[in-house]
Image (cartoon, rainbow, N blue to C red; front, side, top):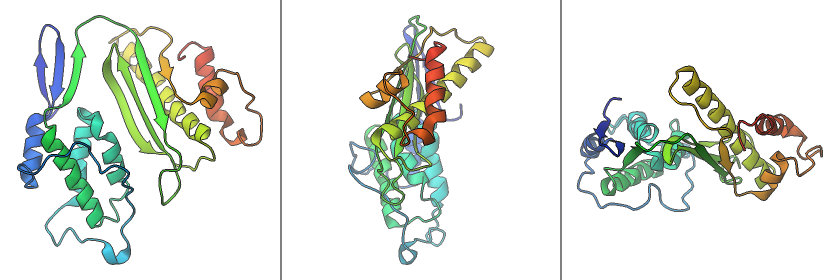
Length: 251
């Protein structure tokens, strides 16, 4: 992969984009900036810039879309720790203002302090996938939509991760969690099928999915009744998850 440094040892393989990150910091003159310990300012909620505060980055000779795209490349390749911050910035490419630029620079300051982080894949044998999903509830101040986050590890090595705003509003925390675990389950089933077709790995069944929402856990395991009117609009998602459990694909 372009810009990825791969190091092989007897213990495993490590991947990072140290040189790509350094070049990015130099491009935006942030190579000597003060480092930050978080990708975004805690509890910050970005909003579209109002018409009078939209910044014409073209006049400033700054390609804002390209700038965010570069850290998005980092996030999808080797830096899952940037996933939430990049997801937030990508939502406002059409209405960027000074706060969005400041948030982008905050990500660069974080990269200044952690420029050599990446992924590590152990050479130890294993065939178990453990996955984790979570969701906030109505965190978007503009739409009240929730945010999904998930990751999956193959024998303690990170293989899948994603953060995205859910496309529809959830009327409860449990519903937001159902949507998150549905997205994760769909991704896991596709990934395992692809690996088996390419004869890369044979994974142990079932894939273990971890949740911290008891209502979600009880419902997908059949311990709660889902026929009430409040849940009817997400019956398809719930039955998809329950089918994956019943066929021993996930647990």
